[in-house]
Length: 334
Ligand code: COA
Image 1 (tube, protein in one colour):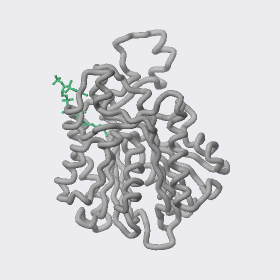
Image 2 (cartoon, protein in one colour; image 1 turned 180 degrees about the vertical axis):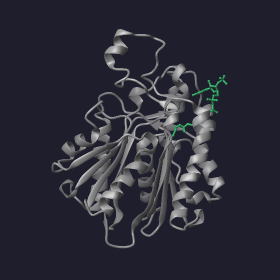
Image 3 (cartoon, helix red, strand yellow; image 1 turned 30 degrees about the vertical axis):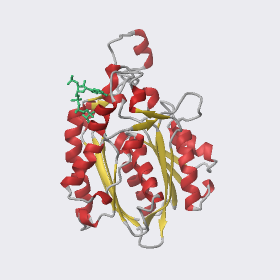
């Protein structure tokens, strides 16, 4: 078995900043409610005409990751792209990245695991490196969520949470002690509808939505049972982290940096208290970007690396929970 190493990290977010106060133009909400419940102060939302799509943002993040890895698109053997907001219903966004970056006709795989998408994507890429099938894999998480939100007061419980952006990393065969030490992935499909967008889908195709037009049918907007999701998240995050650490005989005190999916600052603080970790062991940037779903971990990891909070040899742990429900962790010797 080969080992895997993160060679380069990159991120991209749209220029347009939307503060909590800006949201009051659309809906009955306020800065205090959003800050107290979620920690979010602002998010980035693409604006029509700025060229940002899930694929183009992914490409911008990937170019930075490639440059830092000192690799060119021709060196990449495979693309793993995680998103819940693909440019098209099909094909997936990975193939668009293959074209835009000018990679050879390499394989491109889309991962549909929402907030856990990047944890699943990294675990998937790791398997291809470990078996020796590929040497350099581009792993991308990217989301354009602002175009799919209900911006009326009816949708405020969800709309205020989400932001746009992308993060990427290059995972390569390691020739030193760097490695992904463990991956743990879970799902519980009986709770699929507690956090979901049900249409369009093969059960709710566009023609049915148009023909049976029902103004009360909101199945094309994200639905979230907020309290229920919160309660599961604060259980599953620590569980996934401990499962990963136990598998490699390490403890929360050994972690140099925990990079959790940025779902809610209160969830991160809960996890921190539960695992008895110090402030400097946790990366939080939800204040600036909101919840960017599959992009949140690579954006946060990139910012942490840029700020010198991740160095070679560090133990970096990711964990995520989200729609599915799905959850998981990666334990990384950086
Ligand atoms: N602005 C102002 N008021 C709002 C609001 C908003 N944006 N959204 C909801 N409210 C209101 C509700 O209508 C409700 O009013 P009521 O008591 O008069 O009915 C009140 O605030 C409380 O709503 P509730 O949903 O119970 O709030 P909460 O304390 O559970 O916080 C979340 C809501 C979404 C912040 C919280 O449930 C959460 O973080 N859940 C998990 C989210 C998550 O992580 N999702 C992604 C999965 S990875």
